[in-house]
Image (cartoon, rainbow, N blue to C red):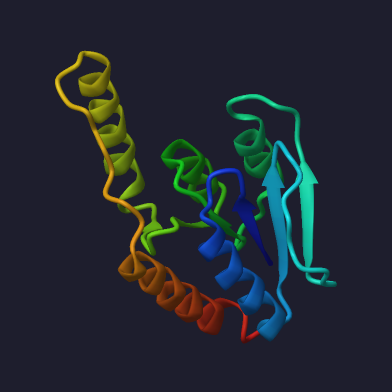
Length: 151
């Protein structure tokens, strides 16, 4: 089991939380991005650079994710692919995408996309907050305790 990060769009503060968590718990973490990402030197942290393109990182993550892996992403279509393959998907605001909620989230995303494209809504997301950071850290800690401590 490992943690994969859709690293291009993940806030630095979330990456920092992940770096500390994987070191503390000896968990493999891989950043996937279309450009080099700074990260601490560690036997547990690596990165994969994919070709530039809108879904290259997503496609690579979806290809290599294994059942039980945790993927950090705010990308709902990627989360759907991860959940379908038996992985877990956690967004940087601390919300898990699950079999129970992913299709609804995908439908809502598509609806909002249509509304934005037709000019009916601006679709601005609330700024990333300290509450979001704390929610993420709490969910990550619970996940690690439940899924990685017994390995």
